Image 1: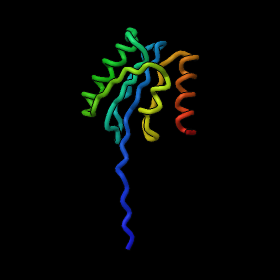
Image 2: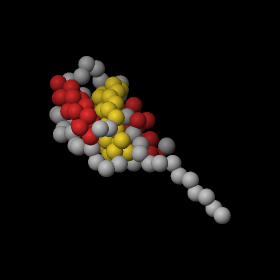
Image 3: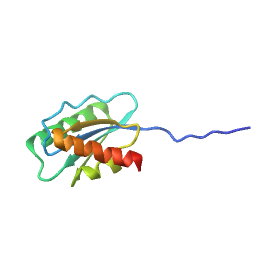
Image 4: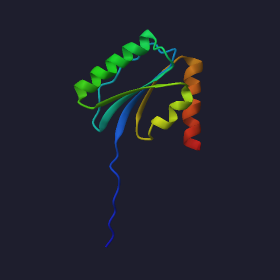
Amino acid sequence: MTIVASAPTTRKTVLVLGRSATGILVPETADGDEAILVLAIGWPLTDPQRAVLEAAEDAARRGRVVFDAQLIASAEGVAALVGSSDRLMIDAGGREARRIHRALDRSVSA
């Protein structure tokens, strides 16, 4: 007799807000989502970052999921907080978006 146990998979929606964020639309939670996580790069928050943060909090409340927000110093801090099954949205300008994608790619290949 073989018993297979697997860990439950959880998924969160992760919104990465760069310093050059323009204010993306926050998606509604989907089936399987357990949280909305906002990762804001830099301090102080810009007006677009603040607006997305507030919209994400409202979406989490409407979807009845956990809301979490973290300030991170740079793009390199993003990779440790994003899981392979997470829905990822990046709001950042060209150069900054490429930096975030490189940090995520390095974490996958490591």
